[in-house]
Amino acid sequence: MRKATLVTALLLLASNTAWAQFTESGPLNSTGFSQARLSRIDSVINAEIAAGKIPGAVALVARNGQLAYFKSFGFADVDAQTSMQKDSIFRLASMTKAITSVGAMILYERGLFQLNDPVSKFIPAFADMAVVSEVDSIGNVTATVPATEQIKIIDLFTHSSGISYPFASNNLQKTYVDAGVIDGLTSKDITLAAQMELLAQQPLLFEPGSDYVYGLSLDLLGYLIEVVSGKSLEQFFNEEIFTPLSMRDSYFYLPESKFNRLATLYSEVDKDYLTVSQGRESNIILDNPNYPAGEQQSYFSGGAGVSATAYDYARFIQMLLNNGELEGSRILSRKSVELLQSPRIDSDGDQVPDFGLGFEIIVDPAKAGELGSIGSYSWSGAFLTSYWIDPSEDLIAVFMSQVRPSQSNIRAKFKTMVYQALE
Image 1 (spheres, helix red, strand yellow):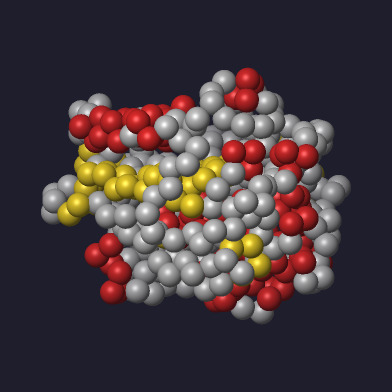
Image 2 (cartoon, helix red, strand yellow):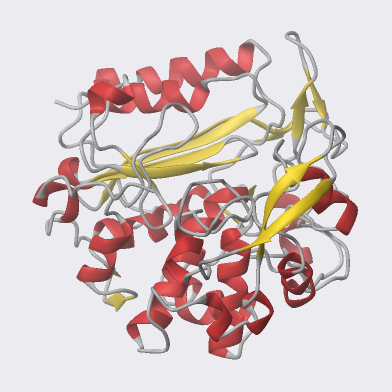
């Protein structure tokens, strides 16, 4: 792994102007935007709905600590003709990872571990790992070698642990599937602890710290939070993040009173129409396509398990833009936020992004090839959700829809529409 050079102080320091009350009930403040150009977002999203690419969406933009754009479009459920609402709830999938990264940093700031500590110091099952050295023609691992390095906690943040996903096509896929390792979204009555102990029995894809592969590292980081805090990840998130930030609609599993606000998950089966997902149309298998509605379950995935509204998630990322604080609730120190958004892994073509501690980071907008800013950081979710945080423009944005698989490029178009509207 090559360590990226830190870009500029601009990358690391969010504006101190973003301290106004961040409320969805007040008037929109489009200061700094051309209102006419901002309205182009409407046309782009509505065109995607009309083309049958998405059933509906919620889009939110905030600048200088105030909402500049916040609208819902189309349907949460097409068959029932249920309109999408601004308080519709969405499966965040991998947008959960940012929350887990923040959760781990909370414990780090309390002196409970160092980022360069080995994971095995707290979870002994990961002490003696092996690395895949040979596989046969059908994907069975036929030889391994002992890992010479321990997985460090920081390797979990950066996906450099050697731990992959069962849905990923690589030398570990068959091993994971045969062993019963899951991708992180399930209605089965299993625990994070049991799954991570199972994961520890599987080999690694490469020597820890030597490469990047997107995978279950953040589920393991979530389990580390459970071990160190002595609380379930659900309890920890509620007490340390959701409640202090007034994220009132953020859950691993929805209470029954909010089932009706969960947007239906769709699949794009061809170029002409969407169908309600059965949970098996893509490489990410959902044993319950209504997840997370249903009976209360016990698996709390730090990599994929949270569902929330666009507004709740906007409060979370506004806290990061504000250097760790929102409306008097300090979640992290300024220095921890700086570290989270510092590039640690250099881009290597299309497969490896410039990556910090839980986020993709734009180091060079020209290299990215689209509108953006040096130092903005982001990620997305498997079910057509996304967000980004732009310190230099004092801006955050959230897009939510619910389709997988999808050929839509609406998330990229939304980002373009936001930036082209800046004055």
